Image 1 (spheres, rainbow, N blue to C red):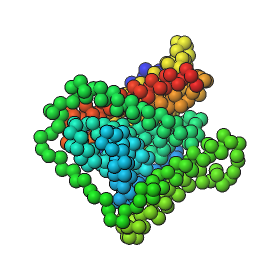
Image 2: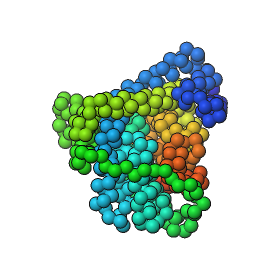
Image 3: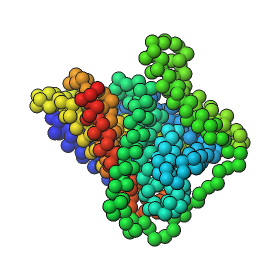
Image 4: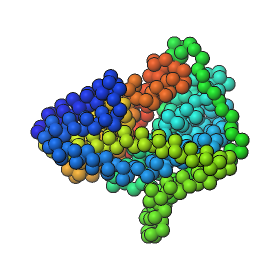
Length: 446
């Protein structure tokens, strides 16, 4: 089949997925699987091969994500229920002072989004956003946007959230390097988003009509009695990060150790982080409470992993069509195998999927699947992390009404849909531009 035919069927499958999820309220796992079947059958992969590829794609993703995400969700839930997340947030913001509150919110969001998913981190922090915006007598986006920027930067750039956790599976980049680069790039990009948004809000971007008239019912919870200290609450977050980086550092120093290889394995590192969270939670939680928190975490993880795995199935079937090699051959014959062309294709693919499906994980997995094949077929010497950044940059663009995160921010902050577009969508689109710019500049330097 031609590239045009394959892309057409992918577009049709994407439209069907969107119809099933948005209009017919079908579970995303089923919708994505149906979409994968449409692509597989229409692109003549074969009925049996399509079914096998769906299972293989799901299984391969679970091999990489299953245990780390499960341990990470347990870690985050224990930290949240024990009051550790609230301690981290309140301590950082209290130490920062009024003038530095927006930066403190961004840093807190960045830290909390390492062990917990974006929506949980934002729900924890939104009462503080509302409280401090009132104290500072400034519009709510002054604190909400830094929180969005910090949490989303960590969510897409720093493991153990699904997208950064999968990067080494597609590109020759170690997990330790993914963490280091994610932090090095994520923090300044977050600050850049804040600065650009300040420029916009000072020029009338935000208006009173962007806020609902009714009062937002958000309780600012007090810190639990006997909650863990700041240092203790930070331990389950920092421990797995240090362990994951350890392998990269030891390799750079020429140190070979089976013990280091063992504890720096993402499954083991995240398990040790979860164990640390259990130990710390014992200070103010009973065994029954910890068991309930872990059970809730696993229920939440099950939903996340099913949808993510189905996204992996969809991406695997697209990969089985041979689209990557066709794109690479077409780019080569057109003389368009430049760094900018490769990054542009990576951005465009993830952009199309995020705008149409609203799932950042699916968009990233699909674009990384295709682009890893393009790099292999073209033999391009472009830095692979620049391609990763381009994929993630496209994924950050134009999040709108079909993204659950959009509604979490909009409803919890008391914004109108327009207010959501002027905060959540705008902040992530600005971040997208920054990340793509870094990818382009980095591709010519490294």
